[in-house]
Length: 378
Image (cartoon, rainbow, N blue to C red; front, side, top):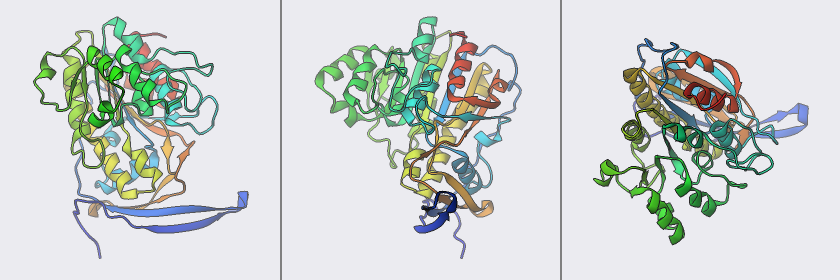
């Protein structure tokens, strides 16, 4: 019996095992299915796509753990469409770190943030643990406003890679303490509680540099020069936090620099769902991420001088789409792992200079291309 238009994904807790004869060991796989209500997608007009028009703004969206399996599952469950898959520029990204064929989020986040590969676990430092300048630190002195946004806590590896410099991603207190000296104009991630449980000295230092709000409608937002917006939650009950705050960040940064802006947006919980082999959660989080992609694409289309790049820091779960019924909002998937995999991840791009991101590239190449386009280096 087929179920249609259920608002909540339904989990299928099935377990499959198969023999990997080449390695003479058994691999455990987990399967799950999801029924979703179609959310639609957006297709821009492509008038500016691939042109050589001047780029003033870059929006980099990173789906944590979002490999081909997650993209396919979300697309087919959503009736065969996503905003990101409606785009015309497509590429692949290799994600290996400096010391491991399978990267973690810290090393890949650092590559995306700095244009240099480093060891797993390192944030904003090279293999010798020396500080590497990140995109905001390079662009802010040139007059760009820079921001980060994530459904992880602010000390999560990906957002932290764009402002922190620490030899271990688990150094939570040191990562938060790096924020006041950062080059960010806007930051939003988890959470009010995460901030209020930091040492008082760290809280005071952050408030000395940023206007801190817990509500995007706080009157203090309008008159602030630098903003830290900390929602109550970034977990499953966050509502439309990611797409809504993407719009908020774009508006905020646009108003604070005539030169232009750089914004990194992370959908962090695709990865978290894949780590627990939660297929409905993976689909739901990928669809939520695509809403943020839509917000960025709609702005880029209106603005005419904004480049949007969408990719992932790595693949998680060795996620495979096994079956789908797009007309019924149904998809069945299989996970071969609960960890990261070394597989290449997809990249989509839209806007002026988008074609420069087609083909196969390293994660560090993405950062260097962005910097070259905005005049940061290379």
